[in-house]
Length: 262
Image (cartoon, rainbow, N blue to C red; front, side):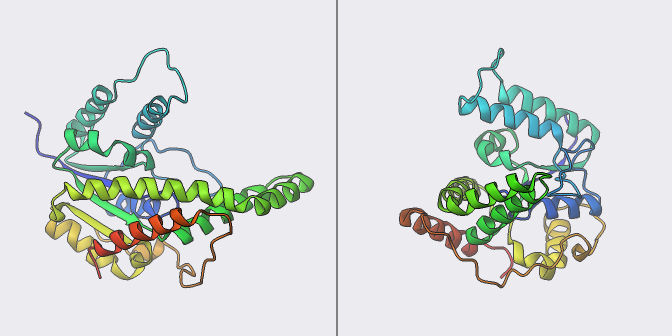
């Protein structure tokens, strides 16, 4: 018999704020790993992603998409059970954050039907803008200024293709999240929009501790999540298929309709 654990999955599309929530929960005392995925210039504070969960899910995703042909096929369920057992033995309450989790929610639900969940989402236009700025900033760090200017022009010229790719991913990951929430008890998940973090962190903390049973120490999220100009208008680049935008709008409405905090 394993002792009862409180487990929290932190879900969200990339560039949507899941890292801020993971960092905040870590500061509040929730174990989310002790060997985190790499720090990069884009995220100087780190991603707060447990390497074990990232590596397993990345490898399984590559095999799923047939991007690689591993010498030994990955038994995702067997390896996931090992991770769960290790954490159950070491911690009474714990969780993890990794974007790839969204692709394995059916498997995780079979293994962890009792898991609590935090989902953070961000409007697709803001996510696309964030991806664009991240790419430009990465190019600015190039020592070769000619190469930087070349890639800047290349990105601008192909912005529609770039945005279409990332919008497709936003739709897919949030679609999987919404499917997963349909089979979860509403009492077991929190759905919050990124722009609510600074104004609803106390409500979020109370929900986690009073309704979900986690034992945490409150920390003001303002010290972690910087105020951003989220009220500005984000213009979508030309070239994105109309059908894709319509689908993204539908998913955004569904996410907002399920928000825990109004």
